[in-house]
Amino acid sequence: LSLTTLFIDYCSPRLERSRHKKKRLVQSPNSYFMDVKCPGCYKITTVFSHAQTVVLCVGCSTVLCQPTGGKARLTEGQYGHTITFGFKELRCSF
Image (cartoon, rainbow, N blue to C red; front, side):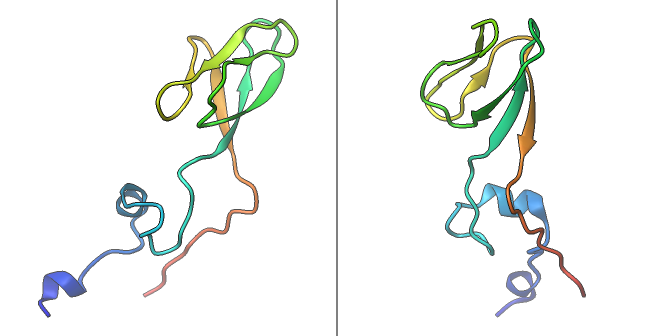
């Protein structure tokens, strides 16, 4: 074993996020839920990050996000805030 293989920073979230979801130190999905605020009526709608259908606003029925091949794309002027449910933060101590 060389020193380069032993010296791997597992606490770096940037490196862990780029790995495959099953090969991370702690398995976690790439998808998430987000609150999207409509610029017209200011209602908040919860949207899945990888939504496969067009999501409309409940109040004024404007398009909030459109599906792509992977993640859903927010339309212009939309503001999204991610939500975490029961997420436990990984802390490293040396």
